[in-house]
Length: 497
Image (cartoon, rainbow, N blue to C red; front, top):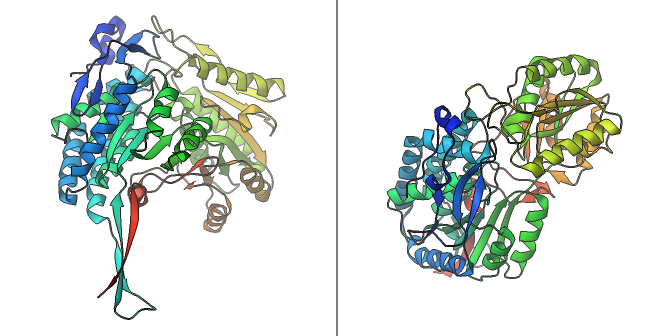
């Protein structure tokens, strides 16, 4: 299968629907079903691909394929797994431009951001290739029984279901997929029905790398709820790893309890950005806007509420307005664009509703929020980035994820009040702190209830660090050595010698 995508040079001619067909990938074979659904290009609203819609028999076949492959893959050496993942990483590096074009086609994000996503996703291949060679256990003497030796070691779980969202369809897949494979598991990939294109190309790379049949399986479905029910009620599935909304994560967790399937969830949040009075205002304001507008604000770890010390509030806002004035909303294939379209009409309605609710309750819209039509043929849901001040805790923007290009700035006088407000939320995914005081950032890092604290920078994610949330933001982690252990179970052996 050869998945082609346009470059920015041929965007005006658009891609023909017949040129992109995404089959199922099960047991090393590509299969195009009679039942299909369409994927839409968010920038043009044209059909971007025709995608096979997996039926119940296809889902069952994917589980059977993964089960059969697991019997052999679990017995491979760490060196075997290292070689496969390294080869896949090399192929991703070779195809970086092509994968980036596919991501821009299906998500609308600017091509520069898409390239960054491919590079980040590829790094997980190299990281887990190495980490898979260091799955450590330990041995010790019994403290109560003479002549007894104790050992603890880690083993793969079995068939892993990776459920991937639309906003980062490659990187959020790869940090699950490569860790699971490095630990000795086999994987069923269920991409978002909105963005299955780049992940399908990744399956092609696994084939090119001579991966065993059934090691990875790629099932696309128009109705994700039906597929989740079928897969999670199959007792042969050992684990589900999901990134996405709180509501969907809760639904998957409920399904998983029927067979006590292991669950890893990274869900949404209301992430705080806290700029103290002694911060570098230019650096902090630019970082806040960069973090808020990454992927057009459609990022689970971006700051939803930006708290700024009263003494520097107005200067901070001025820097933010200057940053926003330089953004360019447009087609992701245009080199000039810094913000692409929202993923769909529902996302646009949420952005409009949140801005309307805030302004209606007394907030001030300092800039942006308008619908944008960047050029001929671009019929997608484009919005200019908005900046709100005067926001209050009862407004939607400070309670629900906007998941769009809207920044809300809140002045504060007492840091303790900010900590109380942040910890009073039912979420705890990420928080950002800017200050020149080591004592202040250390105290805030310890006090804030969140899975990731980012200090004096716009992004804190990386392959080396475990990322996850607390409270309604989920449980379990991905990334780092802990992300590898997430796909294993511990075995304790007590042996008399």
